[in-house]
Figure 1 (cartoon, rainbow, N blue to C red):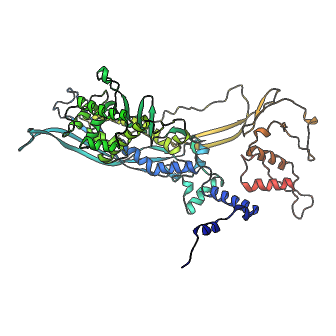
Figure 2 (figure 1 turned 180 degrees about the vertical axis):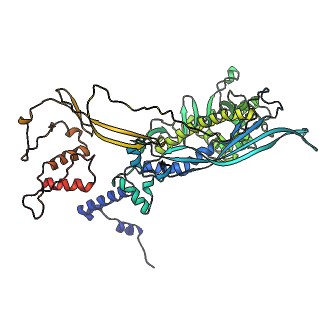
Figure 3 (figure 1 turned 135 degrees about the horizontal axis):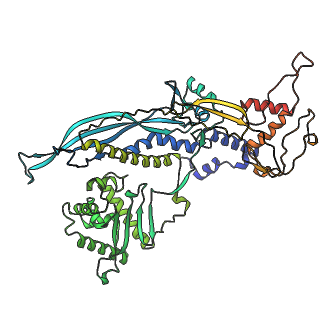
Length: 585
């Protein structure tokens, strides 16, 4: 039998970082940082957010919209037989195609550099499967009935159609799962030839310009918020309709000597309901079960008085709510009596709007009891109230969340427009058919003409086409302007400066080859606002002044080498490297 000391083994397994040596630590940190950025990069959070929205969030937006019921306008002058037709529209599976464009009636692969050069939006077509059902409601008599009603309403289907329709276009983030440059194989290599090898993506191309989503800071919606003015515990949701608040306040309807006792009320779907009635509407069978869900031990007298006052308030508002479906009927009466009542039944409202993440009524009742317990704990001083300004209570919304929010707004607008358009066809003798659009051109010239007082030299003419397949021309003009003192200059990297001195060309500085610069920048002005692009541009300007290379075999012949003074027009990284090496030689 061997006696093993576990603490000695753990101590033997520990390694002191000082024993590894400084060279090893520097090498390890460098490799770890390099491997991290090679794996994730600086924009991986934007790409992951957008990819998750395309794969999961896009479908959930259409599923959350639910079924759309279109009712006729009930105009008796347009319907003589009084058989009013109804329609239901339901969105199904959503699919997004790869970005494509049309040129000469041909479908071509759409790449980001196409959108930049042609001032187009890098987007993809989005399709959705739509089920359209047209029916009438007829009153049918029962042969045998035991409910006391000999008639009921039956839905008679007139037509039913299911088809995929293009519902719009969605912007595509560069280097995302939808981008053509991320395709594998030979096609992907050919698509990436026109793009920069160091481009990490994470941005959109909108009308030729590169746009990026700025992350927005929002309050966390997946936790309970407790406030002490007044005493409330709230469950915040992304949509305002799904917010749920439990309030502990004085009973304003009671007599003056009973108002000191605080009661629990629930704010749900723009109406107030006693919390004890809602417990029984969620399936709680007795008062003891509701108290057990709250986990109340009866130690605090003020909390005991509040529980008793809440039970008495529920008894006075809804008599006999503990039996049958009386509590559920009271909740339905309160919800339907609001200014904008929901179209769903009370069971559907509890399933869709009350804690949507929980499925069964028993789970919803337990979570409601947990909310009441948290509120009582804060009221008794056993728990702190939430601080909204604390950073741990904040969440960052990236490209996926912001796109999902915008898509919900546009989808709601599309539903309203579809409802109005379908009502006109349901009231009369029309039929619900796809609308055919016939587009014609007026032939009007919208080109911008050069003013008579302006002069210039045509530098470049670009012939291209836009998203609609229409051709257009872009003409670039160059003008010679003489600078004056006080004129403001700006580099392509954002640095600006004011012209302070003008000198004749013969008195200006020059190189050994006789090259005279056009402008000299104050070296004390830019370093505080230095950018990598401007630093590279300053280094490339020295490469222009380097001597020409002699051709092999010829003593007096020099090779003509094209040099670049800006990274914006340089074909590749190799050309910049060679030019800088020549400048150092």
